[in-house]
Length: 298
Ligand SMILES: [Zn+2]
Image 1 (cartoon, rainbow, N blue to C red):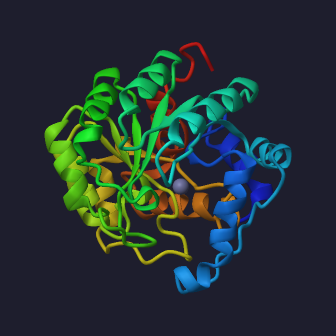
Image 2 (cartoon, protein in one colour; image 1 turned 90 degrees about the vertical axis):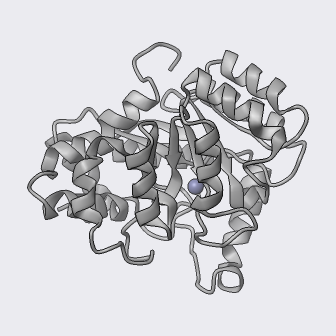
Protein backbone atom coordinates (compact mmCIF):
# COMPACT_ATOMS: atom_id res chain seq x y z
CA UNK A 1 0.00 0.00 0.00
CA UNK A 2 1.16 3.49 -0.77
CA UNK A 3 0.52 5.71 2.25
CA UNK A 4 2.92 8.66 2.16
CA UNK A 5 4.67 10.74 -0.47
CA UNK A 6 8.05 9.25 0.40
CA UNK A 7 6.80 5.82 -0.71
CA UNK A 8 5.35 6.90 -4.05
CA UNK A 9 8.30 6.64 -6.41
CA UNK A 10 9.25 3.11 -5.32
CA UNK A 11 5.59 2.04 -5.48
CA UNK A 12 5.38 3.38 -9.05
CA UNK A 13 8.57 1.59 -10.05
CA UNK A 14 7.20 -1.60 -8.50
CA UNK A 15 4.26 -1.41 -10.90
CA UNK A 16 6.74 -1.50 -13.77
CA UNK A 17 6.00 2.08 -14.78
CA UNK A 18 8.56 4.68 -15.89
CA UNK A 19 6.63 7.24 -13.80
CA UNK A 20 3.30 8.98 -13.30
CA UNK A 21 1.44 11.09 -15.86
CA UNK A 22 -0.84 13.59 -14.11
CA UNK A 23 -3.42 15.21 -16.40
CA UNK A 24 -4.77 17.65 -13.81
CA UNK A 25 -2.20 19.87 -12.10
CA UNK A 26 -2.27 23.65 -11.67
CA UNK A 27 0.51 26.10 -12.35
CA UNK A 28 -0.48 29.73 -12.93
CA UNK A 29 1.14 33.15 -12.94
CA UNK A 30 2.08 33.97 -9.31
CA UNK A 31 -0.42 36.83 -9.08
CA UNK A 32 -3.25 34.49 -10.09
CA UNK A 33 -2.12 31.62 -7.91
CA UNK A 34 -1.97 33.90 -4.87
CA UNK A 35 -5.63 34.81 -5.47
CA UNK A 36 -6.60 31.15 -5.84
CA UNK A 37 -4.85 30.31 -2.58
CA UNK A 38 -6.48 33.28 -0.83
CA UNK A 39 -9.82 31.86 -1.96
CA UNK A 40 -9.01 28.46 -0.43
CA UNK A 41 -7.95 30.26 2.77
CA UNK A 42 -11.56 31.44 3.03
CA UNK A 43 -12.84 27.92 2.32
CA UNK A 44 -14.69 27.70 5.61
CA UNK A 45 -16.92 30.61 4.47
CA UNK A 46 -17.20 29.39 0.88
CA UNK A 47 -17.26 25.61 1.22
CA UNK A 48 -18.14 25.22 4.89
CA UNK A 49 -14.84 23.49 5.66
CA UNK A 50 -11.18 24.40 6.00
CA UNK A 51 -8.94 23.67 3.02
CA UNK A 52 -5.27 23.96 4.03
CA UNK A 53 -3.19 23.94 0.82
CA UNK A 54 -0.69 21.11 1.26
CA UNK A 55 1.89 22.31 -1.31
CA UNK A 56 1.93 26.09 -0.94
CA UNK A 57 5.51 26.41 -2.12
CA UNK A 58 7.55 28.43 -4.60
CA UNK A 59 7.37 27.11 -8.18
CA UNK A 60 10.83 25.50 -8.12
CA UNK A 61 9.99 23.62 -4.92
CA UNK A 62 6.66 22.45 -6.33
CA UNK A 63 8.46 21.06 -9.37
CA UNK A 64 10.92 19.29 -7.08
CA UNK A 65 8.03 17.69 -5.19
CA UNK A 66 6.54 16.37 -8.46
CA UNK A 67 9.91 15.02 -9.58
CA UNK A 68 10.43 13.35 -6.22
CA UNK A 69 7.06 11.63 -6.63
CA UNK A 70 8.11 10.29 -10.02
CA UNK A 71 5.75 12.47 -12.06
CA UNK A 72 7.36 12.34 -15.51
CA UNK A 73 4.73 14.41 -17.31
CA UNK A 74 1.87 16.66 -16.26
CA UNK A 75 -0.65 19.09 -17.71
CA UNK A 76 -0.40 22.52 -16.01
CA UNK A 77 -3.98 23.76 -16.25
CA UNK A 78 -4.97 27.43 -16.28
CA UNK A 79 -8.45 28.94 -16.36
CA UNK A 80 -9.89 32.46 -16.47
CA UNK A 81 -12.62 33.87 -14.22
CA UNK A 82 -13.34 36.89 -16.44
CA UNK A 83 -13.09 38.04 -20.06
CA UNK A 84 -9.81 39.23 -21.52
CA UNK A 85 -7.70 36.84 -19.45
CA UNK A 86 -7.53 33.55 -21.38
CA UNK A 87 -5.14 34.70 -24.13
CA UNK A 88 -2.70 36.01 -21.52
CA UNK A 89 -2.92 32.77 -19.50
CA UNK A 90 -2.32 30.77 -22.68
CA UNK A 91 0.83 32.75 -23.44
CA UNK A 92 2.04 32.32 -19.89
CA UNK A 93 1.49 28.57 -19.80
CA UNK A 94 3.15 28.04 -23.20
CA UNK A 95 6.25 29.73 -21.82
CA UNK A 96 6.07 27.75 -18.59
CA UNK A 97 5.83 24.47 -20.53
CA UNK A 98 8.72 25.45 -22.79
CA UNK A 99 11.02 25.83 -19.80
CA UNK A 100 9.68 22.88 -17.76
CA UNK A 101 10.56 19.50 -19.29
CA UNK A 102 7.72 17.57 -17.60
CA UNK A 103 4.98 20.10 -18.43
CA UNK A 104 2.99 19.75 -21.65
CA UNK A 105 1.66 22.95 -23.25
CA UNK A 106 -2.02 23.62 -22.44
CA UNK A 107 -4.60 26.32 -23.12
CA UNK A 108 -7.93 27.59 -21.88
CA UNK A 109 -10.96 29.33 -23.37
CA UNK A 110 -13.65 31.82 -22.35
CA UNK A 111 -16.82 32.89 -24.22
CA UNK A 112 -15.58 36.07 -25.89
CA UNK A 113 -15.28 37.22 -29.50
CA UNK A 114 -11.51 36.52 -29.70
CA UNK A 115 -11.74 32.92 -28.52
CA UNK A 116 -11.47 31.25 -31.96
CA UNK A 117 -8.42 33.34 -32.78
CA UNK A 118 -6.40 32.64 -29.61
CA UNK A 119 -7.49 29.01 -29.55
CA UNK A 120 -6.29 28.64 -33.14
CA UNK A 121 -2.89 30.06 -32.14
CA UNK A 122 -2.73 27.69 -29.19
CA UNK A 123 -3.59 24.64 -31.29
CA UNK A 124 -0.99 25.67 -33.88
CA UNK A 125 1.53 25.99 -31.05
CA UNK A 126 0.88 22.34 -30.25
CA UNK A 127 -1.09 22.44 -27.00
CA UNK A 128 -1.82 18.94 -25.69
CA UNK A 129 -4.93 19.73 -23.67
CA UNK A 130 -7.41 22.54 -23.08
CA UNK A 131 -8.97 23.36 -19.70
CA UNK A 132 -12.53 24.59 -19.28
CA UNK A 133 -13.78 25.63 -15.83
CA UNK A 134 -17.52 26.20 -15.96
CA UNK A 135 -17.92 27.01 -12.26
CA UNK A 136 -15.03 29.48 -11.78
CA UNK A 137 -15.63 30.98 -15.24
CA UNK A 138 -19.32 31.39 -14.43
CA UNK A 139 -20.28 30.96 -18.09
CA UNK A 140 -22.61 28.76 -20.09
CA UNK A 141 -20.58 26.14 -22.01
CA UNK A 142 -23.43 26.13 -24.58
CA UNK A 143 -22.78 29.81 -25.36
CA UNK A 144 -22.86 30.52 -29.13
CA UNK A 145 -19.53 32.30 -28.59
CA UNK A 146 -17.98 28.90 -27.77
CA UNK A 147 -19.58 26.78 -30.47
CA UNK A 148 -16.76 27.25 -32.96
CA UNK A 149 -14.17 26.62 -30.24
CA UNK A 150 -15.74 23.27 -29.28
CA UNK A 151 -15.69 22.30 -32.95
CA UNK A 152 -12.02 23.26 -33.28
CA UNK A 153 -11.08 21.26 -30.19
CA UNK A 154 -13.01 18.23 -31.48
CA UNK A 155 -11.43 18.50 -34.94
CA UNK A 156 -7.95 18.73 -33.43
CA UNK A 157 -8.71 15.66 -31.26
CA UNK A 158 -7.08 17.50 -28.36
CA UNK A 159 -8.50 16.43 -25.01
CA UNK A 160 -10.40 19.08 -23.08
CA UNK A 161 -10.45 18.82 -19.28
CA UNK A 162 -13.87 20.11 -18.25
CA UNK A 163 -14.81 21.07 -14.71
CA UNK A 164 -18.57 21.07 -15.19
CA UNK A 165 -19.71 19.34 -11.98
CA UNK A 166 -21.55 20.96 -9.09
CA UNK A 167 -18.65 20.25 -6.74
CA UNK A 168 -17.29 21.79 -4.64
CA UNK A 169 -19.65 24.67 -5.43
CA UNK A 170 -22.72 24.78 -7.62
CA UNK A 171 -22.50 27.39 -10.38
CA UNK A 172 -25.17 28.86 -12.59
CA UNK A 173 -24.19 26.54 -15.46
CA UNK A 174 -22.62 23.56 -13.69
CA UNK A 175 -24.12 20.11 -13.97
CA UNK A 176 -23.82 17.25 -16.40
CA UNK A 177 -27.22 18.03 -17.88
CA UNK A 178 -25.77 21.29 -19.26
CA UNK A 179 -22.48 19.84 -20.48
CA UNK A 180 -24.16 16.82 -22.06
CA UNK A 181 -25.82 19.28 -24.47
CA UNK A 182 -22.33 20.33 -25.61
CA UNK A 183 -21.45 16.66 -26.10
CA UNK A 184 -24.63 16.03 -28.05
CA UNK A 185 -23.69 18.89 -30.40
CA UNK A 186 -20.00 17.87 -30.60
CA UNK A 187 -20.04 14.09 -30.06
CA UNK A 188 -16.47 13.73 -31.32
CA UNK A 189 -15.00 15.72 -28.41
CA UNK A 190 -12.32 14.03 -26.37
CA UNK A 191 -13.61 15.32 -23.04
CA UNK A 192 -12.09 14.49 -19.68
CA UNK A 193 -14.67 15.14 -16.97
CA UNK A 194 -12.66 16.59 -14.09
CA UNK A 195 -13.33 15.13 -10.65
CA UNK A 196 -15.36 12.39 -12.41
CA UNK A 197 -18.19 14.93 -12.55
CA UNK A 198 -18.50 15.09 -8.75
CA UNK A 199 -21.00 14.86 -7.20
CA UNK A 200 -22.78 13.38 -10.25
CA UNK A 201 -20.38 10.45 -10.56
CA UNK A 202 -22.96 7.93 -11.76
CA UNK A 203 -24.10 10.34 -14.46
CA UNK A 204 -20.48 10.88 -15.50
CA UNK A 205 -20.01 7.11 -15.89
CA UNK A 206 -23.15 7.07 -18.05
CA UNK A 207 -21.58 9.70 -20.36
CA UNK A 208 -18.41 7.59 -20.63
CA UNK A 209 -20.55 4.67 -21.76
CA UNK A 210 -22.48 6.80 -24.23
CA UNK A 211 -19.59 8.71 -25.87
CA UNK A 212 -16.36 6.98 -26.95
CA UNK A 213 -14.35 10.19 -26.37
CA UNK A 214 -15.41 10.85 -22.78
CA UNK A 215 -12.96 10.10 -19.96
CA UNK A 216 -12.97 10.74 -16.20
CA UNK A 217 -10.10 12.14 -14.18
CA UNK A 218 -9.50 10.98 -10.63
CA UNK A 219 -8.96 14.43 -9.14
CA UNK A 220 -10.11 14.34 -5.47
CA UNK A 221 -12.25 11.28 -6.26
CA UNK A 222 -12.56 8.72 -3.48
CA UNK A 223 -10.27 10.49 -1.02
CA UNK A 224 -11.39 10.81 2.61
CA UNK A 225 -11.76 14.61 2.12
CA UNK A 226 -14.46 14.14 -0.57
CA UNK A 227 -17.96 12.75 -0.43
CA UNK A 228 -18.28 8.95 -0.64
CA UNK A 229 -18.32 7.16 -4.00
CA UNK A 230 -21.42 5.43 -5.36
CA UNK A 231 -21.67 1.85 -4.10
CA UNK A 232 -21.20 0.44 -7.60
CA UNK A 233 -18.16 2.61 -8.49
CA UNK A 234 -15.62 -0.24 -8.56
CA UNK A 235 -17.67 -2.72 -10.63
CA UNK A 236 -18.57 0.04 -13.07
CA UNK A 237 -14.86 0.85 -13.52
CA UNK A 238 -14.31 -2.60 -15.01
CA UNK A 239 -16.16 -1.63 -18.21
CA UNK A 240 -14.42 1.75 -18.56
CA UNK A 241 -10.98 0.85 -17.20
CA UNK A 242 -9.19 2.42 -20.18
CA UNK A 243 -11.10 5.70 -19.82
CA UNK A 244 -9.91 6.77 -16.37
CA UNK A 245 -6.89 9.06 -16.04
CA UNK A 246 -4.81 10.27 -13.13
CA UNK A 247 -5.57 13.81 -12.01
CA UNK A 248 -4.80 15.32 -8.61
CA UNK A 249 -5.24 19.13 -8.41
CA UNK A 250 -1.66 19.39 -7.14
CA UNK A 251 -0.65 21.73 -5.48
CA UNK A 252 -4.06 22.96 -4.27
CA UNK A 253 -4.98 19.86 -2.29
CA UNK A 254 -5.56 19.68 1.47
CA UNK A 255 -3.73 16.32 1.83
CA UNK A 256 -0.60 14.53 0.59
CA UNK A 257 -0.38 13.52 -3.07
CA UNK A 258 -0.10 9.89 -1.97
CA UNK A 259 -3.66 10.02 -0.60
CA UNK A 260 -5.04 10.20 -4.15
CA UNK A 261 -2.84 7.30 -5.28
CA UNK A 262 -3.91 5.28 -2.28
CA UNK A 263 -7.58 5.75 -3.23
CA UNK A 264 -6.89 4.55 -6.78
CA UNK A 265 -4.90 1.60 -5.42
CA UNK A 266 -7.89 0.70 -3.26
CA UNK A 267 -10.21 0.50 -6.29
CA UNK A 268 -7.71 -1.66 -8.18
CA UNK A 269 -7.42 -4.03 -5.22
CA UNK A 270 -11.18 -4.28 -4.73
CA UNK A 271 -11.83 -6.19 -7.97
CA UNK A 272 -9.64 -8.88 -9.56
CA UNK A 273 -10.62 -7.62 -12.98
CA UNK A 274 -8.85 -4.30 -12.23
CA UNK A 275 -5.61 -5.00 -10.37
CA UNK A 276 -2.20 -3.75 -11.50
CA UNK A 277 -3.24 -3.54 -15.17
CA UNK A 278 -5.80 -0.92 -14.18
CA UNK A 279 -3.20 0.98 -12.16
CA UNK A 280 -0.76 1.06 -15.07
CA UNK A 281 -3.50 2.32 -17.39
CA UNK A 282 -4.75 5.06 -15.04
CA UNK A 283 -1.41 6.25 -13.73
CA UNK A 284 0.49 6.24 -16.99
CA UNK A 285 -0.71 4.60 -20.20
CA UNK A 286 -4.07 6.32 -20.76
CA UNK A 287 -3.01 9.87 -19.81
CA UNK A 288 0.22 9.40 -21.83
CA UNK A 289 -1.87 8.42 -24.85
CA UNK A 290 -4.24 11.38 -24.43
CA UNK A 291 -1.34 13.82 -24.06
CA UNK A 292 0.48 12.21 -27.02
CA UNK A 293 3.65 11.78 -25.04
CA UNK A 294 6.62 10.59 -27.03
CA UNK A 295 5.37 12.36 -30.15
CA UNK A 296 7.79 15.27 -30.15
CA UNK A 297 7.40 18.74 -28.67
CA UNK A 298 7.51 17.63 -25.08
ZN1 LIG B 1 -8.37 21.55 -10.76
